[in-house]
Amino acid sequence: MNKLIWSPAEAAWLLAEIYAGTLGEVSDIDPVTQEELARALDADPEYLEATWDVWVEPMTLLYGWNEERIDEARYWLDAELLGGLANP
Image (tube, rainbow, N blue to C red; front, side):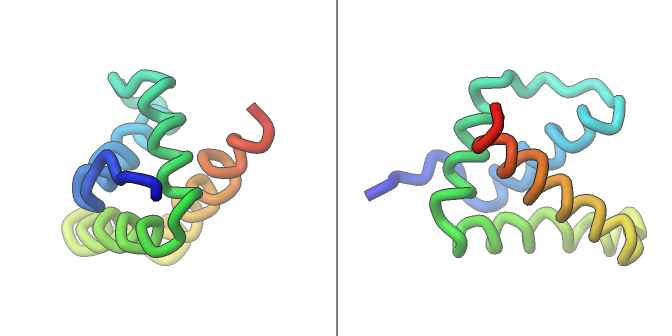
């Protein structure tokens, strides 16, 4: 059984930091933590969706993310963060 290291809320915070780093903001999330998070999310679809929900809801409500921005973030999560596991 794969033990979760972070709650969905903690994982969502990490995702936000990693994503911000890809957008040019300062992020102090190290590559090892990033890979561990990606592997944990990739290993458990329910955990992935719970983390996504926790991450995207405040971004929509507090920061006014529109559907396009949400789609871009989901593409990044699926194709780049999780997809990067297959192509390191």
